[in-house]
Length: 423
Image (tube, rainbow, N blue to C red):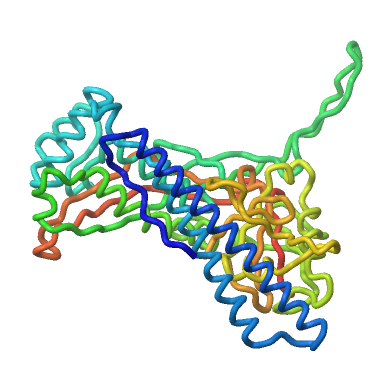
């Protein structure tokens, strides 16, 4: 694969810069497509050897594994370039501030981060009737940093990108739902309306848990006026926040963290009941069926009701995705297809594939593949406000920035998500 230079983020000639960035994205997409073509050729060779000699050559298997790894690396590079291109500036147009209050807060926050001077932030947060002293948990970061962190999280946290995100001002979000649906029926214009039974309502609670990161900086970095502290702090916390969220939204137990959708009770889909997630078995322990392995994926798709299938996605980790890449239909076409553009997902049987490393590998009784409408099925709760506390004492000569956000999550529609169980 051909190496390409990274995108230049600053240039005196914006038009030239945009052309270069577009060229880099196109080149990365071309590399990805070329890697997938090589993968298909190698896999076809492997399948041919199995048909003629009942086993594949070791060198062919090794070549296929190398190409598969290169395919994952090309996809990661493509995602990284797309994310960098989509990053907006934290300042306004031409570097101008967006609003006076925001500028004042940004200046006070910058002084606090660089020198530890907190008087300006105290005055601003007292004016806003919010508590913001160090012992109370730090100071609110400027809104531009919070928006940037949340926007980047939505792009690099796979479940957050698929789910519904609700912003709250308190520590708990509650919603009622009816497991049987509302009572309804048809009546004529002048006909009597018979009284219906009272709906059976249940309450779902989504508490916002505390997630933290503690990036460190040297005082030399903080003293350098050229360094954009806002961008530095955003970049430092977003990856660790996304990594922790990605695990919690999938496998979290709901104790001090969000409730992941794999941590709920499951039941065979034929016996599905509300408050549990239905699953289908592959019929083979620890593997796909030996013959027609893709049939179980069709069963999984059609286990979901039609209203949910329209916006459904597959969720699996890269090792499971690597296994499915080798599947073909009866006409010899690969079921897995690479993305058609830099900002698109790979597809499986026409449905997007989200790669979540927290999903389990294929094993005995594993729930390794999820399929559903996560926009309706899973809810992410964000409490407004991202706080940071400057700590120059605990790790001298470094300055630590204890940064926290409140986030929760859980299933809100248990019929919108189905699982494939290898059993």
